[in-house]
Image (cartoon, rainbow, N blue to C red; front, side, top):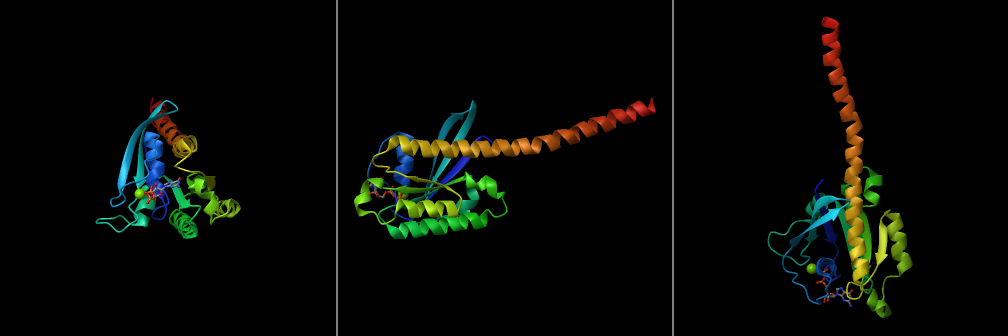
Length: 205
Ligand SMILES: Nc1nc2c(ncn2[C@@H]2O[C@H](COP(=O)(O)OP(=O)(O)O)[C@@H](O)[C@H]2O)c(=O)[nH]1
Ligand SMILES: [Mg+2]
């Protein structure tokens, strides 16, 4: 797979655009357009493979032609679900999104999904007005079997970059594992086919 699609989901104002822009440009700008949904594209090299990374930044306010959360979940290979540690309602929304991801991906192998969903508590710099305890979020993350991080897009570039790189790595590993799982049965049937053809010829000689 040369394309990796990551959706950054969460309620309005949690810092989704800030996290994406921080990862792509290393900068924290402060204010981000939120009236249109958009897909950011970046070319990366992972383990010697060229990857086209697509990052989906939803428009959480109502805007024209907006895709549904279900569409976004079906589109993505990996999910970064963001809440604001100083806003309890955004944490409840994040929980509901985790639930929906699980539900919509029930058909997929569950173990595959575990490394492909991250729960991220943003705005750690606002910990003096914190409304969501770290331990509580950790519990939810283990309930949904996803990885948990707490950070600040405003203050931490390294942590933000690490999360995106890890997700790219995990999606890329998942796709390699799928290729490996497919290959043995594929090569077996090819070997069988060759054997059948030559076997028959040998018999007729
Ligand atoms: N204090 C603080 N503010 C942040 C942080 N990340 C984003 N913001 C602010 O939160 C607001 C909403 O951010 P935005 O990225 O537009 O949120 P989105 O609607 O989820 O895309 C903006 O005013 C940002 O400057 C952070 O880590 N700390
Ligand atoms: Mg935004």
